[in-house]
Amino acid sequence: MRASEIAPKQGLTIFDIDDTLLHTTARIRVVKNGKTIRELTNQEFNTYTLAPGEEFDFGEFRSAEKFNRESRPIEPMINLLKSILRNATNSRVIMLTARADFDNKHLFLDTFKQYGIDMSQVHVHRAGNLPGDDHPAEKKAVWVRQYLDTGHYGRVRLFDDSMNNLRVFNSLQAEYPAVLFYAYFVKPDGSVASISQSTLDEMAIVRIPRDELASQGQHYFGQFERANPAAVKRLFKNLTPLPGGSGLQYGTIPHSDDGNYGIAIVSGEDIVGMLILKPVRGFPLNNAYSVEFVTVDESLRGMSIAKSLYGIALSILKFAIVAGESQTVGGRRNWISLSKVPGVKIMGWGWVEEMNTPDRAGLSPEAKKNLKQIQQRFERSMERAGGQRIGTEAGAAEWGRKITKHWYLFPVTAGTREFKTQANAVRIYYNDHYDLPIGQNNGLVAVFD
Image (cartoon, rainbow, N blue to C red; front, side, top):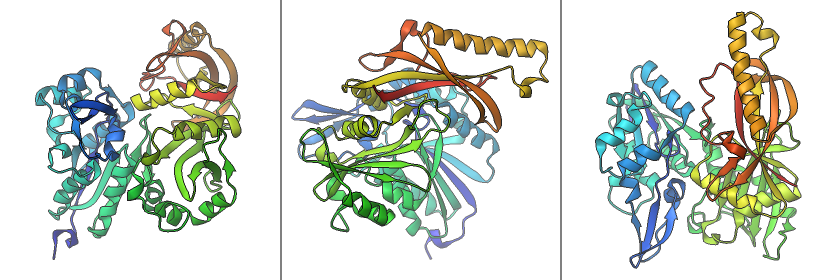
């Protein structure tokens, strides 16, 4: 009897690092004939397949100094990790990264210690140390197997920003039927979505080469066909030529069960790009959606498939696309590129909680004064940024209570790498609202003007 068939008792919690716990900036260089031909983000590296004659240069990935200096915490995930370390019993917590060894172990660990994480309770495994050219997801699975093969664990959960990593992780369920698997997708703002196997099958096309997605049917990727066969059939019956003369077509897949909306681009009988949008409740602009995920067939890189998907949502469907308060470096580049599309307008949005409401009536006069001053500081920053109040939302659900939100829109200017506001009045990225006693938030929104 193998160890996985013995009923284990402990729990195992696994955290990815890059863009799960910290937003990081390191790039992996793709080198051919001694020259760098491409630089990959962490997400791109997770699914990149080396072509003949190519090799990776992990110089930046091994720099502890760069990691310590430039990494920014994803506050909700940092807080979740600390809470689990404080409260978990009969369980083990590890970090599992695609990176290899850093050049300074102590400086690397100090990065987490400065955010209050007791690294004596967490072991860091580096999948990049494993030999071979397997994808990072497969190398991470090697470490998961090593733990589960001990027979000590009855449940295992993974927090990761990579759908491919989560898909491979969940596929291990077949090898360990006595173990409960929980996959959690971490979004750029630190919010977490529990991902089922059927959802992972549907999302398995995220930035994976076409030859790894051999179609099980005539018209579409196999995993998506099995997850949503009726929707795919409707999609292929109602295709429209994509403007621009590329020969590509597009179609839409409304999700009536959850309000999500899918947009697909098709080449011949293949889906080559897909954008899934989630409605943003209470946003003061009509038809507001946030991006759940976007996928592009790697074999068609360079054809601006992702930009076309956003263009369909904005210019044809007239949706407003909302970005949250935190974006990866790659996400910022995408929005800078999006701002250059004719007709697309990028603006900043923000909201602040109104203090003069009945639920605050029991506060002392001094407390009310302090909270009102925080609200007024936010409103003044909106004014300095050239913003205008565009609406008030009463009864908004936040943190288990009902609040009143004042909504603002303000102009932003595209730089080379990110957006900025007038007089730098508003921090669009990495805002620090989490610990304030008053609700407030901000981000970006794209509309077709």
